Structure formats: C-alpha cells, structure tokens
Image 1 (cartoon, one colour):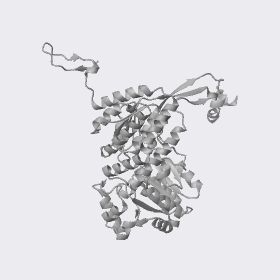
Image 2 (tube, rainbow, N blue to C red):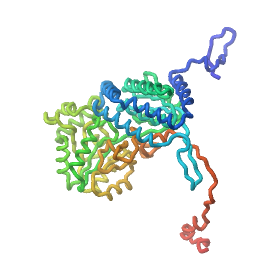
Image 3 (spheres, helix red, strand yellow):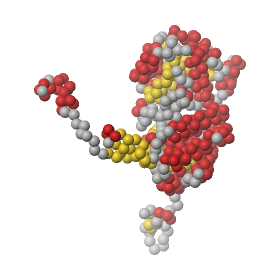
Image 4 (cartoon, helix red, strand yellow):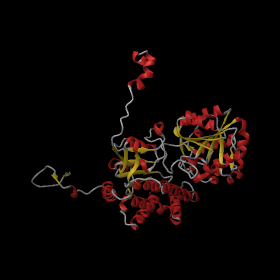
Length: 489
C-alpha cells in the first residue's frame, strides 16, 4: 500500500491511500499499459505471435513509410543520407523477418530425446529498449520484432535527437497491430522529453534492458539491477593481403564505407595493406572512388574532424562533398566517395586510429601478414575490441588464424563489412542492428542480438539411461601424471 502525505486537520501522520489513488509518473503509466498488453498477449499461439511480427515489419518495410522515416531521420539528426536509410530500413527489416519466421518461439522450441530434455519458450515480460540517433527508425522496429516474437511487450527510450522519427514509427507499428486486433500497447515509447532519469526509471521497471548506442547508457543498464544486454563500440580494421582480388576488395570496402555516410558501427575505419601490394591496393581504392590525402591535408582532416578531442557533430555522417570543402581539399576531391588518410601510429595520440563515423578511412602499411595482424590487434586494443575485423584474401588459413588469435566476436572474409556483420543474405550471421562484443567490451553476449535473448526457457527433464563413467575413465589421465596407484589397476 502506497503512502502519501495529506493535510488532515486532526492528525499529522501520513494517511495510507490505495495505489489507485496515487497519480502514476510518466514511466509508471507506460509500464502499466505495457504490462496489461503483455498479459493479454502472453499465451497466444505461434501463428498469432508471427502475425504480430509481420505487422511490425510491414509498418517500416512498406516503401512510403520507409521513405518518410528516412527523410525525417536525416532532417532531425543530420546523420546519414535518405537513400541508404531507406535501403537499411527495408533490408534489415526483411532479413530479420526472414529469420524470425523460420524460428519457433512458442511452446516447445527444442527436443533432445537422448538427454531427455524438452525446452519450452516463455516470455520475459516487458523489454526496455534504448536506441541510438544513428538508426532512430530501423533499430526500434528491429528490437520490437524480436521482443514481440517472444510474446513480450516493449517500451522504447530513443535518443532525444531522433525522438520524432522513433515516435512516428512507434505510431505506425501500433496502427498495424490494431489492424489485426492485437494490443497496441505491446509497443510504446517513453514520453518526451526522454531524460537520463526517465531512461533509468524504465531500466529499473522493465524485465530486460537492451541497449544499442552510447556506452554511458550501456553502463547504466548494467548497473540498473535489471538483467541487461548492452553492445559495444565498433572500430573495424580490415586487412588486404597479397593474395586478395584488389579490385573486388576495393569495391566492397567502398560499398561498405560509404553506406549511410559511415554511420554503422560495422563500417570500416582502417585498412591495413601488406607492403607487397600496397601501391596497387591504393590505386584500386582510388579507382573505386577514394581520394588519397596528402600529409598537409591529413593535418586539416584531424584538426577539423576532432574538436577539443571529440568528433565534430558538424562533420560526422556528412556527405563527401561537405567533408571535402571542410577539409579544404582540391576541387577534384568533392566528386570522390570517401577519403584515405595514411597513418603510422595507434592510440590516443593518433585519433585516426579510432572510430570516425565519417567518410574517412585510415590506411596503414604492413611489411607482411604477420605485421598486419599485429596492427589490427593493436587497433582493436585501442578501440573496438571484441567487435569485429575483416580480411580480403584467398588464403583461408590466414582467416582461421585471425579467428583463433584475435579477441573479436566476428572475423569476416571477403565481405563488404557493413553488409555481412549485422546479418546478410550471403552471411550466416543473423540479421540485427545490435552486435554483442563479449566480455572484451563488458557485454553479456558475444553474438548478434536475437529474439532468443528475449525468452525465458523452461526445461522439462525426464529420466534417461544412466550416464555415469568410472573413476578410472575420468581421473585416469591425472593419476598417471601424479603416479597414483589407482592408475595401474
């Protein structure tokens, strides 16, 4: 029972008042509606859950909505470009829908007869989702589809910069749910203005927090007392070795780097080229649309892309011609797609070694593959550890070596990194807009975020034939090492 202070003439102590008489705060009000909607949805069958997922997907996928939201996002945030945002919204939504419709999330989702186990999926409840300004339309839908697939409700705390876009897509998702007779309050947005306090209140009130975006929000989620999934920062380095198809590598790097003006955490931030093909690889990148900056131009890039140690809000995710003019590059550079800047160092004293969120690609020269691998490791240890790296090669032994030795969740071989890392139609990784980076970035997952992370699993356990080895089978190798007498028996 809640207690509030009321002015009562003949007594000074607070008077107990029923909870219904206490005006809920904005987060409480949203949560009450979310819980009511989720309770009504918690026991639907697989067909209904999938119908809800289709409805959410269609809210963003339909072309007029995708364009409207892309235009709104660019107008409000100034980040990226409309054409690529349309493509991102439709591609990610379509791919995620493919993955979700192929997967069970209601009732029995797995059987293992040999172990006598049957697994039942159960909803978690209400998911609190924190979403970034770089994807104010796509990420909310991506997370909502995953949450509702598991028969959860979701409340979204968007970046203030992208609030209008997120509020619009939430309205569209709610409309689509209503059209098929499902509770609109399965999907909600925190009331504006979204503040740190309201976001933290959501984190504490929900059943699972999923954070994509600022590392400050990730840390807040993990300290909220609620189970949380946060994802890490990217700073993708890729290697071009002497066996690579240089033209193909250059085209893939270009396609990935320029997509949505490099707003993706999976966008290449550095390319490490082995000495044997360095000049040819640079030439291939130039043919693909790159402009190679001179040492003097490099200095201007650094001075203007970073202001007082922070990336300039005026230059990140901007079109190439805007950057060319800001960096005072020659007129010919304004027609280029992205900019190459050669670097030799890594660390705080070398800002080009970090994530740039801009059409600037740092280039390193390495004596051989071993040196290139060491450079990639150095870059990741500076920033982006755990996230991912790439390799353009025809030598799969080298790819396996990177996967074995580097502390990353994903090693992509011969990919346009942005289009393979978060799931692709030619990549086995699941479609997502949130990539876990493992304990290397203090994340709780080391894989792509999926609906499975938003399920509780009940295990039905039945007897099986006894599976109990002998002591000798288990301890025998150790006994031999220590000369135990049992080992001889």
